[in-house]
Image (cartoon, rainbow, N blue to C red; front, side, top):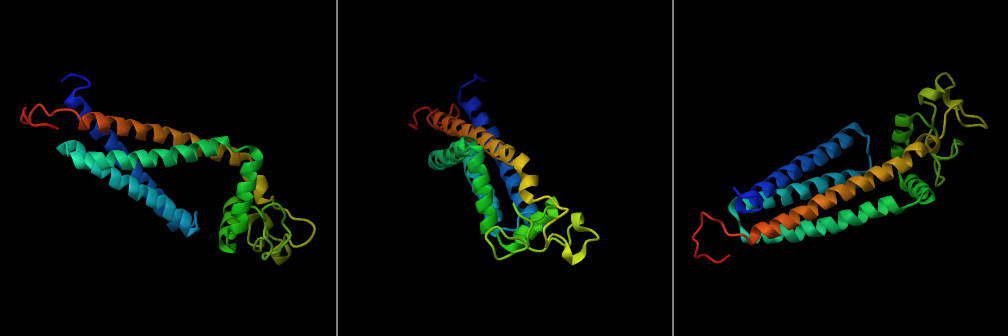
Length: 222
């Protein structure tokens, strides 16, 4: 077998799509776990995670079948869809890496404002924090929050915890701030990494699609 020949291209494309299938199952599993464990209670986020996994799974299956059968139509649509996915993922990765610290904080603040009290309550319990930037109880305010009396940091204080001028709990911003930049950096880095693997898949599919199968009729035109 000559490296770069028909068999080599076929095996490389099959291996790459098997890797995509594993990644897609990881995405679907993470989304399902997050929903079941109420770590992510925003259904649109959960649906987006699971949707990306399902889309990647379908694309990978199409690429795998196309590679095994040297199917011209499947390989063509595989290249087109995978290239579009590359553009979206590459753009999102660049945006995540390009935002500065103030913009990151502003995005997290807006996410808190648009969240329901159930989401805020879940985050407060998970991080043992009270409020986003202010612990004063006002659940109807844009940056308000539900009661903090059941948090571990309020143990023994009862319903009067974090309703006056003092609060034994840290704000959620204090807990999240050290990890905000890290989260954006990791998301952008992983997005760029997988986007470059996708453009490699497009290149492999294009190359493999225009190679002749040595076992086929030598007079057949591909």
